Image (cartoon, rainbow, N blue to C red):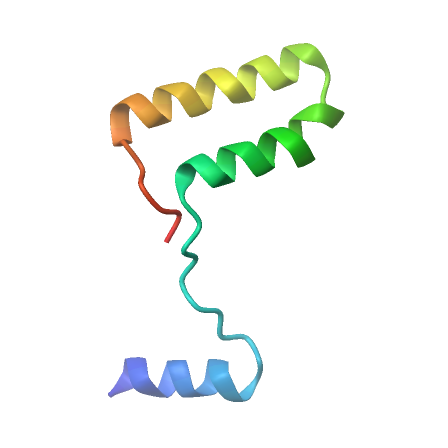
Length: 64
């Protein structure tokens, strides 16, 4: 019951968001295009390396 009340409050207050259907691959492409292009090369490399390790260990499918 408590979860339903929280969900109802989120809907009424405009804070509810559906779970993302974006795939990890789509996220990486958008992140590369929108964020990485504005970073210093060393920072972009650090992000890329971290994401690569995350992919190997967790094998994400969707962001949700």
